[in-house]
Image (cartoon, rainbow, N blue to C red; front, top):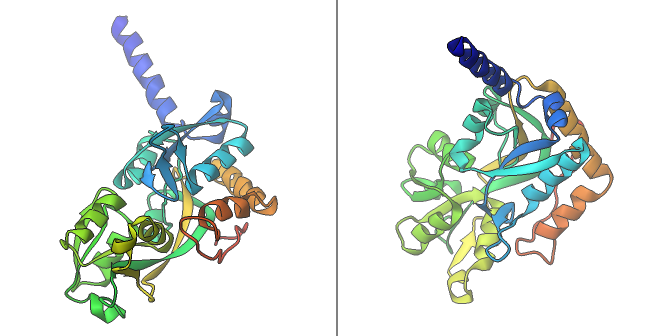
Length: 270
């Protein structure tokens, strides 16, 4: 009898895990578990004084939760955890500098894009004048990032070292272990601006872009109702002006990573 009872409990847990990310269960529970990064400024970072997460991604995650009328619960993860945690039901959605790619769309679903940028290279001034200069170079990228995959897939003659986060890639660059860092333009811009003046003068971001990146919310495969609700929330943030205000806080002229806003969140895919 005890064995049957235990098996029933296990079976119930398995069923709940499978359906944990449905919109119905999220709203029934009153909370949404969101996978985020804690070391990817200006998108997300843990404030060392307050120990509170802040950044562009964090504000969008909060905006989505508000419109779903649930409480956001953040779980910090590494870059290579983003898709597995969605697939394993450890988080309901992921808002963590996650680029939408055809390869990833085979594994999880995505919202409309809420940020559009491009991939560039941070290196000593004059080192990389064009894509041709990447041949034979030794670059750094964050583990499991689209930048890392881009170099491996499209630049066969370029050597690559992968690290857990952006600060580690910059350490390798400063130590002359690598010749450049591949990442999205706003991340590199903020990283460059945070360097001490003497150090900053040595580096520049490449004039050429390697690829266009669209960041979107990661959603478990097949959860179409949840996907539609998140898309509505993102479009509402755009039409209300909240999305532009968030962008201005983190990427506007007075921010630490000033860039132009080259997109609007649209009901059709960005």
